[in-house]
Length: 457
Image (cartoon, one colour):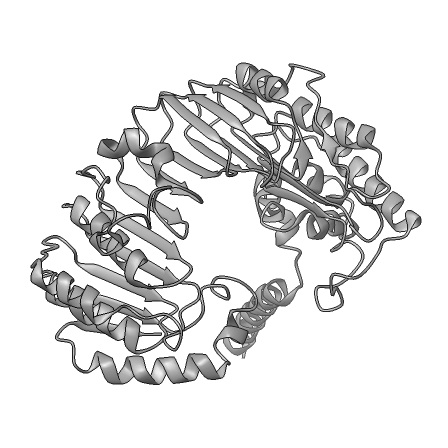
């Protein structure tokens, strides 16, 4: 009897112990708040700044964590007011909405307590916005040791014409030492102000200026700059002189009267030009990648023996990737880029974007094809070719003849979508047109005749 009672007590004790353990396991616990604050800040930094600020409502512990957000701080005045589905490009902000947005940006920037701002982007409409406010934003950013600044300005032409742009003035030298990337869009900045920035940015590696005015004369000198993008106003007669011994990549959209002098760019390897090729021809021997957007390769192209192509192209001995964006494919343009292919013996990757290809109006003549075949061209290292804007029979003949001249060519990509639509939110529209479906059907049939890997998009 005593033994049975003792065994019963032991069993009850074990059962109570298991029950307590089970209750502990089932008891709800706030495990996220048990994490170290460093991890919580890392989690918050993966959110947008708008989402991060909203976490301050979770608990007292989370109230100030967003102030240490170490990711990208992005402020867009349209996104602050409208959802993406509601914004159609025609909305005009009220003065109250503009003030609310400015107060929001000021609050976040002034409250920031992190070691440095990794990346700050502000996209704002200039209409009704004091330029002193923008100056203050820039100053706060620099005091917070910002590493990347992106300022995009918009101006509603329906309200103000001619438009006035934000004028950047160099008011302080402090804080520029941490800056690695700088991007201005639609700002007015003088060459002297820009050079002052470069003089005080010992770590600046990337500079991008889009549609910026007041740069009639620009002498850029930087030991740290690696990537330079100058997409300037079309009518600015800009004279540019660049001294950048560590520059690797250069993008430029010149006006018709622009002059460019690359004084010291020994490491330059990648060039994207929207204009005449002759601007960088003196550095042909060092280029590895070249993108050209123009309707002809030189000022003299199209004169004299048009079917002989452009014969003044020097040897591009190190060029391995070439992209050409043309308005159309005809006798002259065909001969021009064949001349480019001949001048690049190491070329492995060639992309051709046909922006407006219409076989009914523009064709490569039989005479040009005959001359091309008679010369027995050999592009011995060419391995990959991509044709965007594939339109019809004209393009079929081009690909077939190029394939016959490239013994190592093993991959061809044919995209029937007009390049205007590619890479943006309206690409799906380009792939719904009658022209796209007709051209794609032709490309599929044509691909069966080629003895290599053909991808039809």
